[in-house]
Image (cartoon, rainbow, N blue to C red):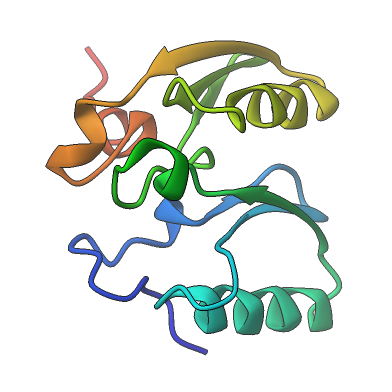
Length: 130
């Protein structure tokens, strides 16, 4: 199974999948016909075959005109989730998905950030401990 979105520069799984706990994954989705549609559908099938429960979240690309506007590139710490948002109708779904796993969800406007190749998780996962 391929692990990177078509034409996406980071090639990181966190651009389309978020492991929410040991049994569940939030997985991005694209509409039929998008260059990465087949990849995400294939990965959904693969993760399901491994026993994971899959919840899908649509990418906000089409509505916003942004590329790879992912809601799953969130940061989770201390029962809180910093969730990428894009002033899109799917923002509410993303926040609800995170609260559904018991996290207090905070929207983070990533409209500018995503243009530079990532969202919340991408810019925070390498923050060193003091």
